[in-house]
Image (cartoon, rainbow, N blue to C red; front, side, top):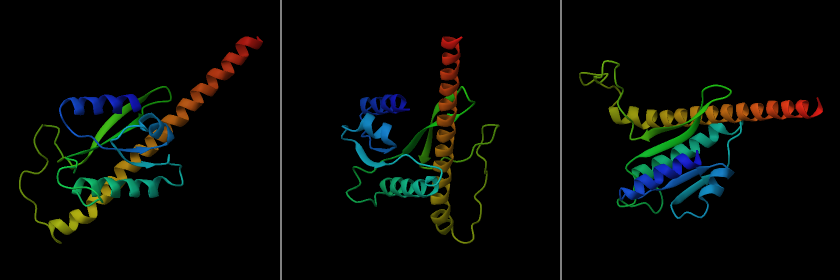
Length: 173
């Protein structure tokens, strides 16, 4: 993950974009620890802390995006928030996956058109609905990413343990 994030950061910096980073876990903090663009750091999630941690990160990222976080002005406000995580595919395969959290992208139909052709009517107001749904959506996306990463880590450890047992059997046999 760290190398994929570093490549994305370099690409954005070469394009003249300012980059900010919120790290999760000791490896990410250590990998990017001396970089000046780190604006926040959180411990690695456990199964007990994933929900609370995803809420905290969603709130922090949203405040940065909206420009309401301390020390953020119009010039330093990010124009998008992207999450990189290990997506669990199988025991042997995990994929580094970036997803854009903010701004939220409209749903696209399989035929290529937008999911809604006409403006829906909202009651309560659109603002009240979004005020509630956007944080819940971000928290859900972060929780999904954290659970995927945890599954990928467990799978990697299991594979390494099985390889270790095979190594011992070969040496003893």
